[in-house]
Length: 150
Image (cartoon, rainbow, N blue to C red; front, side, top):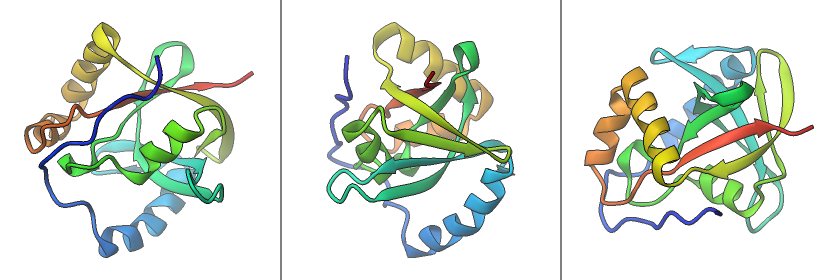
């Protein structure tokens, strides 16, 4: 199954210019294996869905199965998906993650059904703020598995 999550009709405001500025600082920490707000971070890079130019964003990650990383397209509970999600959806096999000083090519796959629910429950147990994001919007917040490519 592919990336199929629909946009919402209401939600919190999208992060603004201040957050975009702060993301540059956070990405430096994330590339080294850093943390923010008690969560592990990685830098996710994917080609822009329209431009094809590399676009990077710091993203919280959670350990997945078999060495994969699970990331959540919460956008703080906004009605629209974050830009990184739309870029990954357009180019799921052209994604890289940077963490702990290394760059890893990955394949991205949106989780659905029981698999999504299981990972969502693990994410909310590890970082309860994600459960709060889901109450701010009517969209189902996408959960994405990033698996190293071989």
